[in-house]
Image (tube, rainbow, N blue to C red; front, side, top):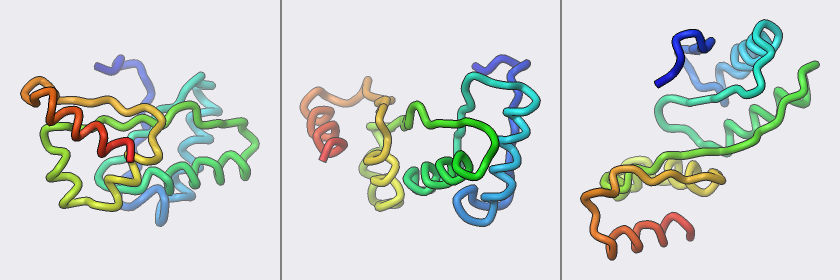
Length: 125
């Protein structure tokens, strides 16, 4: 649960990698200027390429007066729905997995060890 005093900036109606790059940059700069945070968490909604989000963040860093860097790229993989996500979102889903440097596995409690090992091996291909 997030602290209710934690500043949150939502950006609607588009993709931060494409149509909302300028708004995303302005939001990051505004958060940095006002709150001087040690960390900013970016949680994209929907399906998107993590690699594109990384490119946008690097571009913002290069074209901004604020020093920013990416510390961690984290994804949560719902193991129970892994195959469905892979079938429905294909390349987008794989891009997120391949570009994350931390992968949390969720909903593993109803998966037997053998199936879990198989799914984990797919994550690291």
